[in-house]
Image 1: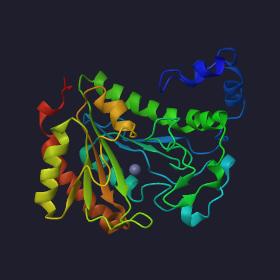
Image 2: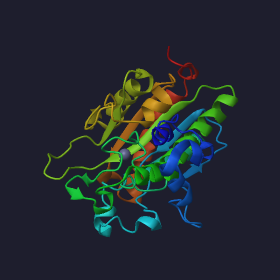
Image 3: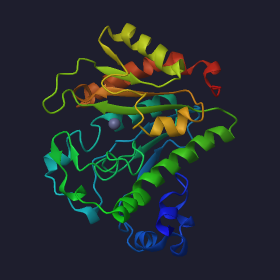
Length: 292
Ligand SMILES: [Zn+2]
């Protein structure tokens, strides 16, 4: 039972609370073998932490980096750097929106193939053994302690950084709005071409999503995905549900098709489109309230 107690601690609880006596061998192993070596980049980056807007932008899939201890996960560079490892272009769009609105942003700094920051740890897709037709050798037969080591090193610190940034906005007396920025691949392996250039994923809170969908259609005249090609109502998602929907924060998840933000011109174009449409939505003081 002792190892179960270690695994079932509250989400995002501080790793400092782990004690070998409480967690058994699995926790002890985690403490003795930290995943990130001294000098490696930290698991998250907070951009513009003192930004004045009561808005947080996040990027769960900002990077395809792999900790040195995991080598190349058994994949070639081409596979690690395609969409299965990260969301190409999403980090730059996130940084651009953070600057445009003077808002903080939190970005993950490691590949979703190491551990996906938008999946609950323990789910099958949290550390995928196969992704879009590619077997990930470094994830095959992963033990529970190794999966927990990745969560402890990367997943929980990233989400604690989001918690802390949201708390910083609340301490200023504001209810934060939460916007997650992603990109989607134009076509999955063997799948149909995806026609949407931008998509908005949302669950029950329409406050940002509905005017954003309308504004993007009006601004571009192009197909906009409404909970396509993925759905914000999918129970496998984590970040928006945990940080925003559960707390009643106004929120949405934005996905830009990655081929449209593959160079500086595309990134600038789509950052401007999103910023123009979001500006009217985020300017409404009535937005910044918890949904009942
Ligand atoms: Zn993503």
